[in-house]
Length: 467
Image (cartoon, rainbow, N blue to C red):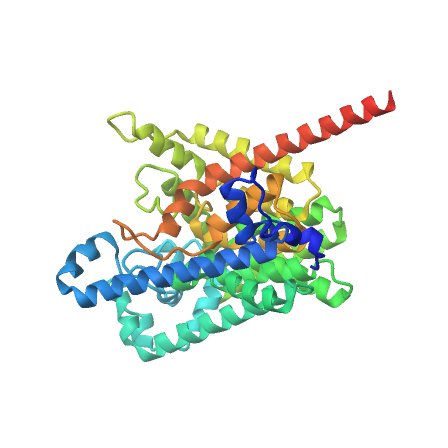
Protein backbone atom coordinates (compact mmCIF):
# COMPACT_ATOMS: atom_id res chain seq x y z
CA UNK A 1 0.00 0.00 0.00
CA UNK A 2 1.61 3.32 -1.09
CA UNK A 3 0.50 6.79 -0.07
CA UNK A 4 1.75 10.17 -1.25
CA UNK A 5 2.85 12.78 1.24
CA UNK A 6 -0.43 14.63 1.27
CA UNK A 7 -2.32 11.40 2.00
CA UNK A 8 0.01 10.54 4.85
CA UNK A 9 -0.44 14.04 6.28
CA UNK A 10 3.28 14.82 6.36
CA UNK A 11 2.73 18.48 5.56
CA UNK A 12 1.00 19.04 8.92
CA UNK A 13 3.72 17.49 11.06
CA UNK A 14 5.59 20.07 12.99
CA UNK A 15 3.20 22.89 12.05
CA UNK A 16 2.17 24.91 15.06
CA UNK A 17 -1.50 25.78 15.15
CA UNK A 18 -2.78 27.67 18.20
CA UNK A 19 -6.17 26.00 17.80
CA UNK A 20 -4.63 22.53 17.68
CA UNK A 21 -5.17 20.49 20.84
CA UNK A 22 -2.39 18.75 22.72
CA UNK A 23 -3.87 15.39 21.74
CA UNK A 24 -3.76 16.30 18.07
CA UNK A 25 -0.12 17.44 18.34
CA UNK A 26 0.77 14.20 20.15
CA UNK A 27 -0.94 12.13 17.44
CA UNK A 28 1.02 14.02 14.81
CA UNK A 29 4.33 13.37 16.57
CA UNK A 30 3.56 9.68 16.94
CA UNK A 31 2.34 9.43 13.32
CA UNK A 32 -0.96 7.96 14.56
CA UNK A 33 -2.79 9.57 11.63
CA UNK A 34 -0.64 7.41 9.33
CA UNK A 35 -1.55 4.25 11.24
CA UNK A 36 -5.24 5.12 10.93
CA UNK A 37 -4.85 4.92 7.16
CA UNK A 38 -2.88 1.68 7.25
CA UNK A 39 -4.54 -1.10 9.32
CA UNK A 40 -1.75 -3.56 8.51
CA UNK A 41 0.90 -1.28 9.93
CA UNK A 42 -1.38 -0.33 12.83
CA UNK A 43 -1.79 -3.94 13.97
CA UNK A 44 1.91 -4.73 13.44
CA UNK A 45 2.81 -1.72 15.58
CA UNK A 46 0.28 -2.68 18.25
CA UNK A 47 1.53 -6.28 18.33
CA UNK A 48 5.21 -5.31 18.61
CA UNK A 49 4.37 -2.71 21.28
CA UNK A 50 2.41 -5.29 23.30
CA UNK A 51 5.33 -7.74 23.15
CA UNK A 52 7.77 -5.01 24.18
CA UNK A 53 5.60 -3.94 27.12
CA UNK A 54 5.14 -7.54 28.24
CA UNK A 55 8.90 -8.18 28.00
CA UNK A 56 9.65 -4.99 29.94
CA UNK A 57 7.17 -5.87 32.70
CA UNK A 58 8.56 -9.41 32.88
CA UNK A 59 12.14 -8.18 33.14
CA UNK A 60 11.14 -5.65 35.80
CA UNK A 61 9.43 -8.33 37.92
CA UNK A 62 12.43 -10.63 37.49
CA UNK A 63 14.79 -7.84 38.53
CA UNK A 64 12.70 -7.06 41.61
CA UNK A 65 12.69 -10.73 42.66
CA UNK A 66 16.46 -11.00 42.16
CA UNK A 67 17.28 -7.81 44.04
CA UNK A 68 14.67 -8.26 46.75
CA UNK A 69 14.21 -12.03 47.39
CA UNK A 70 11.76 -11.30 50.21
CA UNK A 71 9.22 -10.04 47.65
CA UNK A 72 9.00 -13.33 45.74
CA UNK A 73 6.21 -14.78 47.84
CA UNK A 74 4.10 -11.62 47.66
CA UNK A 75 4.61 -11.24 43.90
CA UNK A 76 3.71 -14.90 43.31
CA UNK A 77 0.33 -14.24 44.95
CA UNK A 78 -0.37 -11.42 42.51
CA UNK A 79 1.32 -12.65 39.32
CA UNK A 80 1.60 -16.37 38.71
CA UNK A 81 4.93 -16.85 36.84
CA UNK A 82 4.11 -20.43 35.81
CA UNK A 83 0.95 -19.55 33.94
CA UNK A 84 1.04 -19.20 30.17
CA UNK A 85 -2.68 -19.34 29.45
CA UNK A 86 -4.16 -22.44 31.07
CA UNK A 87 -4.19 -22.88 34.85
CA UNK A 88 -0.83 -23.11 36.64
CA UNK A 89 1.13 -24.64 33.81
CA UNK A 90 0.69 -28.11 35.32
CA UNK A 91 -1.62 -29.41 32.59
CA UNK A 92 0.27 -28.59 29.41
CA UNK A 93 -0.28 -30.75 26.32
CA UNK A 94 -2.79 -32.88 28.24
CA UNK A 95 -5.47 -32.67 25.55
CA UNK A 96 -2.93 -34.46 23.35
CA UNK A 97 -1.59 -36.98 25.85
CA UNK A 98 -4.96 -37.82 27.42
CA UNK A 99 -6.42 -38.44 23.97
CA UNK A 100 -3.60 -40.82 23.08
CA UNK A 101 -4.36 -42.84 26.21
CA UNK A 102 -8.10 -42.72 25.48
CA UNK A 103 -7.69 -43.84 21.87
CA UNK A 104 -5.57 -46.81 22.93
CA UNK A 105 -8.61 -48.26 24.73
CA UNK A 106 -10.49 -48.94 21.47
CA UNK A 107 -14.27 -48.87 21.82
CA UNK A 108 -13.92 -48.21 25.57
CA UNK A 109 -12.71 -44.72 24.67
CA UNK A 110 -16.36 -43.96 23.90
CA UNK A 111 -18.20 -46.32 26.26
CA UNK A 112 -16.03 -45.89 29.37
CA UNK A 113 -13.99 -42.70 28.99
CA UNK A 114 -16.90 -40.84 27.33
CA UNK A 115 -14.82 -39.35 24.50
CA UNK A 116 -16.69 -36.93 22.19
CA UNK A 117 -14.16 -36.86 19.34
CA UNK A 118 -15.38 -38.35 16.03
CA UNK A 119 -13.63 -41.54 14.81
CA UNK A 120 -11.22 -39.67 12.49
CA UNK A 121 -9.77 -37.76 15.44
CA UNK A 122 -9.59 -40.98 17.45
CA UNK A 123 -7.77 -42.67 14.56
CA UNK A 124 -5.26 -39.79 14.51
CA UNK A 125 -4.49 -40.39 18.19
CA UNK A 126 -4.21 -44.15 17.61
CA UNK A 127 -1.49 -43.41 15.05
CA UNK A 128 0.21 -40.95 17.42
CA UNK A 129 0.13 -43.63 20.11
CA UNK A 130 2.42 -45.81 18.00
CA UNK A 131 5.25 -43.37 18.76
CA UNK A 132 4.96 -43.51 22.57
CA UNK A 133 5.68 -46.44 24.91
CA UNK A 134 2.87 -48.96 25.45
CA UNK A 135 3.33 -48.48 29.20
CA UNK A 136 2.11 -44.89 28.85
CA UNK A 137 -0.73 -45.67 26.42
CA UNK A 138 -2.19 -48.15 28.90
CA UNK A 139 -1.53 -46.16 32.08
CA UNK A 140 -4.30 -45.05 34.45
CA UNK A 141 -5.75 -41.56 34.14
CA UNK A 142 -4.10 -40.52 37.42
CA UNK A 143 -0.70 -41.19 35.81
CA UNK A 144 -1.21 -38.87 32.82
CA UNK A 145 1.49 -36.45 34.00
CA UNK A 146 4.14 -39.15 33.55
CA UNK A 147 4.23 -38.05 29.89
CA UNK A 148 6.46 -35.17 30.97
CA UNK A 149 9.03 -37.67 32.23
CA UNK A 150 8.78 -39.81 29.09
CA UNK A 151 11.29 -38.62 26.42
CA UNK A 152 9.35 -40.21 23.55
CA UNK A 153 6.16 -38.37 24.57
CA UNK A 154 7.86 -34.99 24.84
CA UNK A 155 9.74 -35.49 21.57
CA UNK A 156 6.47 -36.36 19.80
CA UNK A 157 4.50 -33.38 21.07
CA UNK A 158 7.43 -31.07 20.29
CA UNK A 159 7.64 -32.26 16.68
CA UNK A 160 3.85 -32.04 16.20
CA UNK A 161 3.73 -28.53 17.70
CA UNK A 162 6.57 -27.22 15.52
CA UNK A 163 5.08 -28.77 12.36
CA UNK A 164 1.63 -27.28 13.10
CA UNK A 165 3.12 -23.86 13.79
CA UNK A 166 5.20 -23.92 10.60
CA UNK A 167 2.25 -25.10 8.49
CA UNK A 168 -0.14 -22.44 9.81
CA UNK A 169 2.53 -19.74 9.61
CA UNK A 170 3.27 -20.64 5.98
CA UNK A 171 -0.41 -20.47 5.05
CA UNK A 172 -0.84 -17.11 6.82
CA UNK A 173 2.21 -15.80 4.95
CA UNK A 174 0.70 -17.01 1.67
CA UNK A 175 -2.66 -15.41 2.52
CA UNK A 176 -0.92 -12.03 3.01
CA UNK A 177 0.65 -12.03 -0.47
CA UNK A 178 0.69 -8.53 -1.91
CA UNK A 179 1.56 -7.01 1.47
CA UNK A 180 4.83 -5.18 1.91
CA UNK A 181 7.52 -7.71 2.79
CA UNK A 182 8.50 -6.46 6.25
CA UNK A 183 4.84 -6.10 7.26
CA UNK A 184 4.08 -9.53 5.84
CA UNK A 185 6.73 -11.09 8.07
CA UNK A 186 5.61 -9.21 11.21
CA UNK A 187 1.92 -9.95 10.61
CA UNK A 188 2.66 -13.65 9.99
CA UNK A 189 4.55 -13.68 13.28
CA UNK A 190 1.58 -11.97 14.95
CA UNK A 191 -0.78 -14.65 13.61
CA UNK A 192 1.56 -17.46 14.70
CA UNK A 193 1.92 -15.98 18.19
CA UNK A 194 -1.73 -14.98 18.60
CA UNK A 195 -3.45 -15.91 21.84
CA UNK A 196 -5.92 -18.48 20.42
CA UNK A 197 -3.24 -20.40 18.53
CA UNK A 198 -0.73 -20.37 21.39
CA UNK A 199 -3.48 -21.49 23.76
CA UNK A 200 -4.35 -24.46 21.54
CA UNK A 201 -0.69 -25.41 21.16
CA UNK A 202 -0.26 -25.22 24.93
CA UNK A 203 -3.16 -27.61 25.36
CA UNK A 204 -2.08 -29.86 22.48
CA UNK A 205 -5.67 -29.75 21.20
CA UNK A 206 -6.55 -31.32 17.85
CA UNK A 207 -8.55 -28.21 16.94
CA UNK A 208 -5.21 -26.86 15.64
CA UNK A 209 -5.34 -29.50 12.90
CA UNK A 210 -9.01 -28.77 12.23
CA UNK A 211 -8.22 -25.05 11.93
CA UNK A 212 -5.31 -25.74 9.55
CA UNK A 213 -7.71 -27.65 7.29
CA UNK A 214 -10.19 -24.75 7.31
CA UNK A 215 -7.28 -22.49 6.33
CA UNK A 216 -6.76 -24.74 3.31
CA UNK A 217 -10.47 -24.40 2.48
CA UNK A 218 -10.26 -20.62 2.87
CA UNK A 219 -7.19 -20.28 0.65
CA UNK A 220 -8.13 -22.58 -2.21
CA UNK A 221 -11.94 -22.83 -2.50
CA UNK A 222 -11.90 -20.21 -5.28
CA UNK A 223 -8.51 -21.11 -6.76
CA UNK A 224 -8.25 -21.38 -10.57
CA UNK A 225 -6.82 -24.89 -10.22
CA UNK A 226 -9.54 -27.55 -10.16
CA UNK A 227 -7.29 -29.86 -8.12
CA UNK A 228 -6.78 -27.23 -5.42
CA UNK A 229 -10.50 -26.43 -5.32
CA UNK A 230 -11.20 -30.13 -4.77
CA UNK A 231 -8.50 -30.20 -2.07
CA UNK A 232 -10.35 -27.35 -0.36
CA UNK A 233 -13.55 -29.42 -0.28
CA UNK A 234 -11.69 -32.43 1.15
CA UNK A 235 -10.10 -30.15 3.77
CA UNK A 236 -13.51 -28.81 4.84
CA UNK A 237 -14.90 -32.35 5.08
CA UNK A 238 -11.87 -33.55 7.08
CA UNK A 239 -12.08 -30.59 9.46
CA UNK A 240 -15.76 -31.36 10.14
CA UNK A 241 -14.96 -35.05 10.55
CA UNK A 242 -12.42 -34.14 13.24
CA UNK A 243 -14.43 -31.57 15.23
CA UNK A 244 -17.99 -31.64 13.77
CA UNK A 245 -18.89 -27.96 14.20
CA UNK A 246 -16.61 -26.64 11.36
CA UNK A 247 -19.34 -28.05 9.11
CA UNK A 248 -20.99 -24.61 9.36
CA UNK A 249 -18.32 -23.26 6.99
CA UNK A 250 -20.19 -25.17 4.30
CA UNK A 251 -22.62 -22.25 4.47
CA UNK A 252 -20.30 -20.43 2.04
CA UNK A 253 -20.87 -23.13 -0.58
CA UNK A 254 -24.63 -23.06 0.00
CA UNK A 255 -24.80 -19.27 -0.20
CA UNK A 256 -22.91 -19.35 -3.50
CA UNK A 257 -25.26 -22.10 -4.80
CA UNK A 258 -22.37 -24.41 -5.62
CA UNK A 259 -24.58 -27.46 -5.38
CA UNK A 260 -22.17 -29.92 -6.97
CA UNK A 261 -19.42 -28.85 -4.61
CA UNK A 262 -21.84 -29.25 -1.68
CA UNK A 263 -22.67 -32.82 -2.74
CA UNK A 264 -19.02 -33.80 -3.22
CA UNK A 265 -18.05 -32.25 0.10
CA UNK A 266 -20.90 -34.12 1.82
CA UNK A 267 -19.71 -37.42 0.30
CA UNK A 268 -16.14 -36.77 1.48
CA UNK A 269 -17.44 -35.90 4.93
CA UNK A 270 -19.55 -39.06 5.27
CA UNK A 271 -16.64 -41.24 4.17
CA UNK A 272 -14.19 -39.55 6.56
CA UNK A 273 -16.74 -39.87 9.36
CA UNK A 274 -17.68 -43.52 8.79
CA UNK A 275 -14.57 -45.33 7.56
CA UNK A 276 -12.32 -44.62 10.58
CA UNK A 277 -14.99 -46.17 12.85
CA UNK A 278 -14.14 -49.61 11.44
CA UNK A 279 -10.63 -49.30 12.92
CA UNK A 280 -12.11 -48.76 16.39
CA UNK A 281 -14.88 -51.34 16.65
CA UNK A 282 -18.49 -51.80 15.69
CA UNK A 283 -19.46 -48.56 13.85
CA UNK A 284 -23.02 -48.66 15.21
CA UNK A 285 -21.72 -48.96 18.76
CA UNK A 286 -19.22 -46.15 18.14
CA UNK A 287 -21.77 -43.65 16.84
CA UNK A 288 -24.36 -44.62 19.43
CA UNK A 289 -21.83 -43.90 22.17
CA UNK A 290 -20.71 -40.64 20.51
CA UNK A 291 -24.32 -39.42 20.33
CA UNK A 292 -24.90 -40.14 24.02
CA UNK A 293 -21.59 -38.53 24.97
CA UNK A 294 -22.31 -35.38 22.95
CA UNK A 295 -25.75 -34.97 24.56
CA UNK A 296 -24.26 -35.50 28.00
CA UNK A 297 -21.39 -33.09 27.28
CA UNK A 298 -23.66 -30.35 25.93
CA UNK A 299 -25.94 -30.69 28.96
CA UNK A 300 -22.95 -30.46 31.29
CA UNK A 301 -21.41 -27.52 29.40
CA UNK A 302 -24.63 -25.50 29.73
CA UNK A 303 -25.48 -26.52 33.29
CA UNK A 304 -24.63 -25.15 36.70
CA UNK A 305 -22.51 -28.21 37.48
CA UNK A 306 -20.01 -27.09 34.81
CA UNK A 307 -16.73 -26.50 36.61
CA UNK A 308 -14.96 -25.40 33.40
CA UNK A 309 -16.93 -22.23 32.74
CA UNK A 310 -13.66 -20.47 32.04
CA UNK A 311 -13.38 -22.68 28.94
CA UNK A 312 -16.99 -23.25 27.85
CA UNK A 313 -18.86 -19.99 28.07
CA UNK A 314 -21.81 -19.38 25.74
CA UNK A 315 -24.07 -16.34 26.10
CA UNK A 316 -26.65 -18.15 28.22
CA UNK A 317 -23.95 -19.25 30.67
CA UNK A 318 -22.72 -15.67 30.78
CA UNK A 319 -26.25 -14.45 31.57
CA UNK A 320 -26.69 -17.16 34.20
CA UNK A 321 -23.60 -15.92 36.03
CA UNK A 322 -24.80 -12.31 35.82
CA UNK A 323 -28.19 -13.29 37.23
CA UNK A 324 -26.54 -15.32 40.01
CA UNK A 325 -24.90 -12.13 41.30
CA UNK A 326 -28.28 -10.80 42.37
CA UNK A 327 -29.76 -13.89 44.02
CA UNK A 328 -28.44 -16.12 46.82
CA UNK A 329 -28.42 -19.25 44.64
CA UNK A 330 -26.93 -20.42 41.35
CA UNK A 331 -29.16 -19.61 38.36
CA UNK A 332 -29.51 -22.25 35.66
CA UNK A 333 -31.83 -21.80 32.70
CA UNK A 334 -34.02 -24.78 31.72
CA UNK A 335 -33.39 -26.56 28.40
CA UNK A 336 -36.20 -24.74 26.49
CA UNK A 337 -34.65 -21.38 27.39
CA UNK A 338 -31.21 -22.60 26.31
CA UNK A 339 -32.63 -23.75 22.98
CA UNK A 340 -34.39 -20.40 22.56
CA UNK A 341 -31.10 -18.59 23.17
CA UNK A 342 -29.38 -20.78 20.60
CA UNK A 343 -32.03 -20.30 17.92
CA UNK A 344 -32.25 -16.53 18.49
CA UNK A 345 -28.48 -16.06 18.30
CA UNK A 346 -28.22 -18.31 15.26
CA UNK A 347 -30.86 -16.13 13.59
CA UNK A 348 -28.85 -12.97 14.29
CA UNK A 349 -25.68 -14.43 12.80
CA UNK A 350 -27.52 -15.72 9.72
CA UNK A 351 -29.08 -12.27 9.30
CA UNK A 352 -25.63 -10.70 9.54
CA UNK A 353 -24.18 -13.23 7.09
CA UNK A 354 -26.77 -12.57 4.38
CA UNK A 355 -27.04 -8.82 4.96
CA UNK A 356 -23.38 -8.06 4.22
CA UNK A 357 -21.21 -8.54 1.17
CA UNK A 358 -17.96 -7.87 3.06
CA UNK A 359 -15.97 -11.11 3.15
CA UNK A 360 -14.38 -10.75 6.57
CA UNK A 361 -17.76 -9.95 8.16
CA UNK A 362 -19.34 -13.06 6.63
CA UNK A 363 -16.61 -15.20 8.20
CA UNK A 364 -17.22 -13.50 11.54
CA UNK A 365 -20.92 -14.35 11.24
CA UNK A 366 -20.19 -18.04 10.67
CA UNK A 367 -17.69 -18.17 13.55
CA UNK A 368 -20.24 -16.46 15.78
CA UNK A 369 -22.50 -19.48 15.30
CA UNK A 370 -19.99 -21.55 17.30
CA UNK A 371 -20.78 -19.44 20.34
CA UNK A 372 -24.50 -20.20 20.17
CA UNK A 373 -23.96 -23.83 21.23
CA UNK A 374 -22.76 -24.45 24.83
CA UNK A 375 -20.50 -27.38 23.92
CA UNK A 376 -18.83 -25.47 21.09
CA UNK A 377 -18.73 -22.04 22.79
CA UNK A 378 -15.13 -22.49 23.78
CA UNK A 379 -12.12 -20.22 24.01
CA UNK A 380 -10.52 -22.73 21.66
CA UNK A 381 -12.86 -21.70 18.83
CA UNK A 382 -11.37 -18.19 18.81
CA UNK A 383 -8.55 -19.52 16.64
CA UNK A 384 -10.90 -19.33 13.64
CA UNK A 385 -10.92 -15.52 14.02
CA UNK A 386 -7.51 -15.53 12.35
CA UNK A 387 -9.23 -16.14 9.00
CA UNK A 388 -11.54 -13.08 9.01
CA UNK A 389 -8.64 -11.05 10.36
CA UNK A 390 -6.47 -12.09 7.42
CA UNK A 391 -9.31 -10.97 5.15
CA UNK A 392 -9.64 -7.75 7.13
CA UNK A 393 -5.96 -6.94 6.59
CA UNK A 394 -6.37 -7.52 2.85
CA UNK A 395 -9.66 -5.63 2.41
CA UNK A 396 -9.72 -2.68 4.80
CA UNK A 397 -7.80 0.44 3.81
CA UNK A 398 -8.67 2.82 6.62
CA UNK A 399 -9.73 2.56 10.26
CA UNK A 400 -13.08 4.27 10.34
CA UNK A 401 -16.67 3.42 11.26
CA UNK A 402 -17.36 -0.22 12.09
CA UNK A 403 -14.05 -1.25 10.51
CA UNK A 404 -12.29 0.59 13.33
CA UNK A 405 -14.54 -1.13 15.90
CA UNK A 406 -13.81 -4.56 14.45
CA UNK A 407 -10.09 -3.72 14.52
CA UNK A 408 -10.37 -3.20 18.27
CA UNK A 409 -12.23 -6.49 18.65
CA UNK A 410 -9.56 -8.41 16.74
CA UNK A 411 -6.78 -6.79 18.78
CA UNK A 412 -8.54 -7.64 22.05
CA UNK A 413 -9.02 -11.29 21.11
CA UNK A 414 -5.79 -12.04 19.26
CA UNK A 415 -2.95 -10.21 21.01
CA UNK A 416 -1.58 -12.55 23.71
CA UNK A 417 -1.63 -11.45 27.35
CA UNK A 418 0.02 -14.44 29.07
CA UNK A 419 -0.01 -13.00 32.55
CA UNK A 420 -2.19 -14.16 35.43
CA UNK A 421 -3.18 -11.55 38.01
CA UNK A 422 -4.70 -12.93 41.23
CA UNK A 423 -5.68 -16.03 39.26
CA UNK A 424 -4.38 -19.23 37.66
CA UNK A 425 -5.96 -18.01 34.42
CA UNK A 426 -4.25 -15.55 32.08
CA UNK A 427 -5.72 -12.16 31.22
CA UNK A 428 -6.26 -13.37 27.65
CA UNK A 429 -8.40 -16.30 28.81
CA UNK A 430 -10.46 -14.14 31.15
CA UNK A 431 -11.06 -11.42 28.55
CA UNK A 432 -11.97 -13.95 25.86
CA UNK A 433 -14.19 -16.00 28.15
CA UNK A 434 -16.32 -13.21 29.55
CA UNK A 435 -16.45 -10.89 26.52
CA UNK A 436 -16.50 -13.01 23.36
CA UNK A 437 -20.13 -14.19 23.31
CA UNK A 438 -21.86 -10.89 24.26
CA UNK A 439 -19.38 -8.68 22.39
CA UNK A 440 -19.52 -10.68 19.16
CA UNK A 441 -23.32 -10.75 19.15
CA UNK A 442 -23.57 -7.08 20.05
CA UNK A 443 -21.13 -5.97 17.36
CA UNK A 444 -22.90 -7.99 14.66
CA UNK A 445 -26.26 -6.45 15.60
CA UNK A 446 -24.74 -2.96 15.78
CA UNK A 447 -23.07 -3.39 12.39
CA UNK A 448 -26.31 -4.48 10.71
CA UNK A 449 -28.19 -1.49 12.14
CA UNK A 450 -25.30 0.86 11.31
CA UNK A 451 -25.21 -0.28 7.67
CA UNK A 452 -29.00 0.03 7.38
CA UNK A 453 -28.84 3.56 8.75
CA UNK A 454 -26.09 4.48 6.27
CA UNK A 455 -28.10 3.02 3.41
CA UNK A 456 -31.22 4.88 4.50
CA UNK A 457 -29.30 8.16 4.75
CA UNK A 458 -27.80 7.63 1.30
CA UNK A 459 -31.19 6.89 -0.25
CA UNK A 460 -32.65 10.01 1.36
CA UNK A 461 -29.75 12.10 0.07
CA UNK A 462 -30.26 10.70 -3.45
CA UNK A 463 -33.97 11.58 -3.30
CA UNK A 464 -33.18 15.13 -2.19
CA UNK A 465 -30.61 15.58 -4.96
CA UNK A 466 -33.04 14.27 -7.60
CA UNK A 467 -35.63 16.79 -6.47
